[in-house]
Every structure is written in structure tokens, then in C-alpha cells.
Image (cartoon, rainbow, N blue to C red; front, side, top):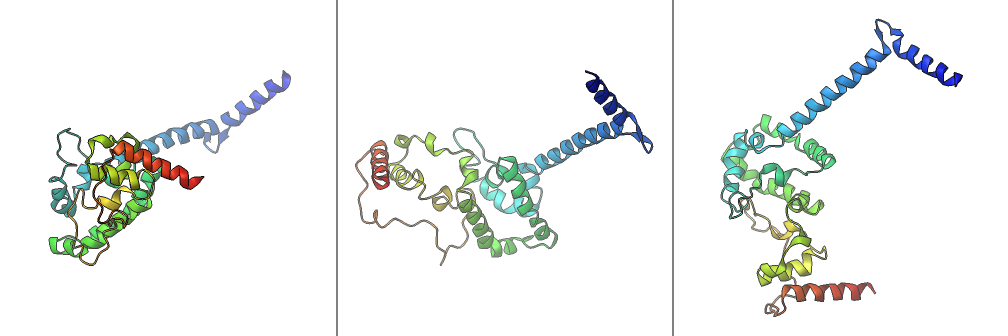
Length: 231
């Protein structure tokens, strides 16, 4: 047990010996407290930039896209659930959120140089802005949509027959993602002339009447076809 006592005394001597003017123990404790304060301040600032109030503090957002949002079902609906700017444009997971914040930091340059500080400028860049966001959502499999909407929780029998058929054939097997069909769900679309909408009627559905099968039957059929193709 003597070696344990020596080890404890050595450790105590190390942390209590003055390092210049302050002990190592004091510096360690000070560094820990400073780290906690820094982390708290950083996280608080991060969350403040993750609010609708912050997003609409710039007139570019408040007078354009926010006004469009207020006229959609994501803003006012029968259930009283409202999607705010960060709900749709910022991931919820911390690491993904930090990555998104770093990407969005370049938007500060647009603010400084007045890239879209007037309505005509905003409309001029609208298609480019929309395409950037569509590409981002396509790349992350509509991550922000799925923060609220779960495909496994969908009650297909409560959907229209066409919606249930499309979800069963394309969303559930992963052949399409939310943004493929739901562009313009919260903001007005840009001029889409000559632009691929990203979703077209599949050839196998063209000219066909709506299936008489129920959504559950369609799901079972799709699962049988999927299993048959794998074996």
C-alpha cells in the first residue's frame, strides 16, 4: 500500500505546486469552469440563431418567403401545429445542425452586399435559391421533412387513393423522397418554365385508371414484389 500513498502524495504535490504564480490545480479548475462557460455561451448563441425571430429579423426574409409561409398549411391548420423556419431548414441533430450553420454562414455575405435586398433582386435569384434548397433536401433524403413526418406512421387508408398509391410505390421503398413531389409546399414556386420539376408521372402509371386496391393491399403487393425481386 506504500506505493499508493506515494502516488497520491506525488499527484497532490503536482497539482499544488505553483506554476509560475498559480497552482496547476487552480489552472485546471479555472480551465474547466471557463470551458463550461464557453460551451454554455456558444450553445445559447447557437439556439438564438435557430429561432423564427432571428430568421425574420432581416427584411429579406420577413418581407418575402415568410409572408408566403403564413398563407400555407404549415403555418395555420386544423391541428394547430406550426412549422417555423428552422424546423424545415435546420437539422435537429447537433452535428448536422453545426454543418448546416457553417453552410449558411456564407449567406451573411449576401446580406452585406445586398444580393436580394429588394423584391426585384429576390425574384431574380428565386430559382437559384430554390434549386439550392431542393438539392440539399434531395441529398439528405428530406431529413427536415422527416423530423415531423414519419412514413412508417402514415395511415394510408386516410389518404386519397392517388396519394396512398404514390407513397406505397415510391416513398416507402425509397424510390423517391419528399422533396421530389412537394416542392412549393411552404413557399411559392419560381418560374418553372423549362425546369425539370423533379417528379413526373411514372410511365407505368400513365393512362391507367386508379387502382381499385386499398392502400393496404397496394402496400402488401409492393412488399411481395420487393421480396420477389430480392430472391
